[in-house]
Amino acid sequence: MKYSKLGSSGLDVSRVCLGTMTWGEQNTEKEGHEQIEYALDQGINFIDTAELYSVPPREETYGATETIIGTWIEKNQSRRDKYILATKMAGVGLPWIRNGSVQSGAAVREALEGSLKRLKTDYVDLYQLHWPNRAHPHFGKHWAGMIDPTKTNAAEQEENLLDILKALGALVKEGKIRHIGLSDDTPWGISKYLELASKHDLPRMVSIQNEYSFIHQKDDPFLTETCVMEDVAYLPWSPLGTGALTGKYLGGARPEGARWTIPQRNGPFRDTQGVEDCVSAFVALAKKHDLDPAQMALAWCDQKPFVTSTIIGATSMEQLKTNIDAFDITLSAEVLDELDKIYRQYPIPF
Image 1 (cartoon, helix red, strand yellow):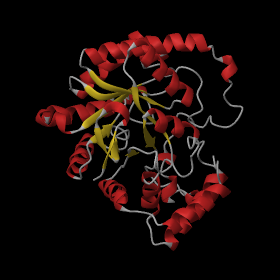
Image 2 (cartoon, rainbow, N blue to C red):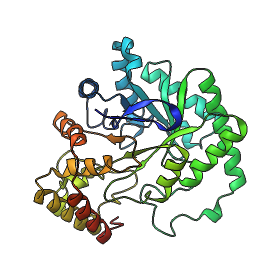
Image 3 (tube, rainbow, N blue to C red):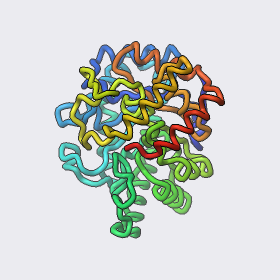
Image 4 (tube, one colour):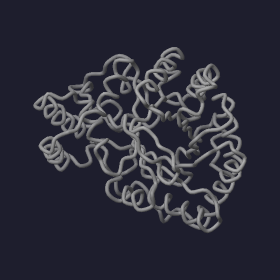
């Protein structure tokens, strides 16, 4: 297993991060514990979760994934310093989580205390803001004209961000959080948090996790430039495009229990003709070079110079093993060149 620095944190994290969002919905507690053990045995030391998981988010399963991780932690307290544990505070919009209210300093403390209780730990290594309060170009809202920044009051946003950052700083001083990060944010969000941290002597954001895959490359190069220049770790989530890049949805196929067969909170916005065409070419290329499409997608992601650690997820041990093994693969210049040609043909397939 290879490791990279988690931005300016000084922490060394595995190039593979174990994602957990299916635990409590598509995976049982026993399966979640088995995945943790297998991942640790492979040298993975980075586990990511969130208070809203499992997914798709429902009131009945709110906190289920953290609870599953917590029962494992409770049985393995002596190993707590052997891995980097990351979780996330939900943003505005879910009525069963703090009545759907916006993120604020007070809400940060309430959310963290709930996560620590479910996780049965005294601290988290990385605490992340799952998505910002303001309108943001994620979850299918990345097309031009879908977000109007002129309707956002910059001064009010800055005041809110400072309130949040001060609360996070207090929790860092209390030892309940080691480092802080972002999720589903933008270059402006990263830069503003870093500016406020410097101005008010508060903790820096050390990472950001955004959706990034072969079929969703919108962060490259503009947001990724900010990450590289400001020493903020870039952590791609959904590197398989919610499973699309495996080819399992081609031709309208909908395997039982797969992500696209489960109703999604933001709708099936990745299910487009563009994705069908792009993935068809992607899978054909993998076959041409005798590569597993899922492994080619993950290896491609890992070889991006701005990527720190790629968040993977699996609903079976077979999938988990296949995904982890992908990080031992180095794609040739020929494969990368052919992939670039496909990308240029389908730059925004959904």
